Length: 623
Image 1: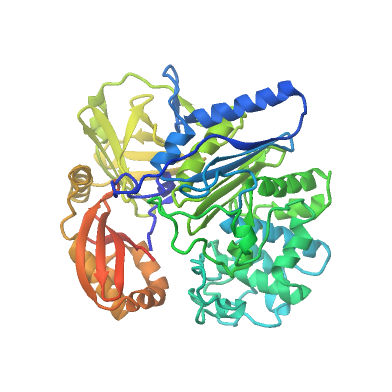
Image 2: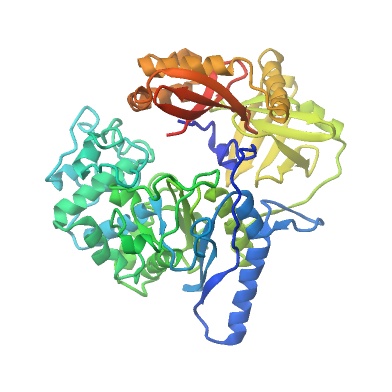
């Protein structure tokens, strides 16, 4: 139930990873195992590839390089141990071929090493693989992307309402997250737990643990990520073909692309589970019961390897180039990758320059994180981990690969550090507000210039001029502008090809926000809770249990999330019974306070972050 402020919240994936949590230590084996070298058979070429692997393995790069400064890098093994990530598997595509694949670490603490054949859950990367199957059937004229899906559904129908009466829910909408359909993602089910049928998932009926999948916005008007939409697509595929979904995916995509280590079967067979990496929580402990089971097959169930996902990417690349029609033609592949909403295409996110466009998708299941990135012209990488901290390290590995292979995207940029009197920044000190309502603060402390977007950790800034400052913690720049009046001062954030303007607040509103932001640094150092955070958490829990939370006590964006998920949250807390006690656990670098709350039927970890005025900015609790 954690809510982000603006798109810049992608800077920091976790809000409390720097806290000491008394985590159990485990030994990380980070020697490359069972290297796969493909392409040229010449030993000289093999040595070049091996040297590339060693540079990546031994020198993960920082987000930003500074001209004239030595390059800061960290061994992969060091980052794995620090982030409590047992295992990682990587495959790299170069020149349209799978150039190398290698495993690092172990499948579980004390377990066997990760190899290129170790299975991981692909999580949401299941979606673009599913989308390719849909495009195959569209090409064969068995499906129409723009027809009403109820035309194809037999065993279940999407209920009509005031939204679907204005526009049809279509496969194009479902596969581009623009059908106005609910349910963002799925939690899965512990091994041995009762599993719902697909219809029960669609209707949110027990034992399904999700809300009903319905249209609650006018289809085709808005982008909103919806795993629920892919569950509807799964029902369409099975109803139209009358073939079980795992077999259908094997026939249409996995077998034609040579993805011999991949399956949509859930749960995984005993034979295959022995080849799978064990999922782990952020603290390094295994997910209780092992891998979750995902009956939402099209959205989240694919078991695979980075090499097989690389074969998927190569299949798309070859289709685009017209050199292969194993699954779809060049025209169908181009239609699949045509952007529909901003960078969202059918099943994939697209971007890059006209000269070197790329496509990608990430995945996040219980205990697994993964990413697929590929250029249309034949380069790319797939990285899979068996840890909920995996995304942070995936970003580091990806930028190092991008630097090694001279990609135009993802690699760390080079910045020039200028010599500027630190006092010259004083004219910009204060609190600013984005159009979205998010607040950012800037201040100077012991010669260091810092900034904080509320809900994120504070970061140091470095000048390239008296008006422009860059961050080393992430690839982002701030450019300040001034006017006749103090109120005319503004700061523009440049990140990921986007710019966002924040205008300075007056002292009446801005000074308290700045003071609280600075005080948050001290609270993190001293590990003391924010005044009123426990009381606010008590009110929030009581309101959720009663079904009558005080929305005026919340940031508007967070209040909207609570409204949308109220029935789920109320049901989750009701199963725990009455509250017995609260125990403060610590402060995250973003200023979120962690509490362990003991209920009648168990305990849960909660995080709560307050706005400077005391309202709730965001909250989160463990499932």
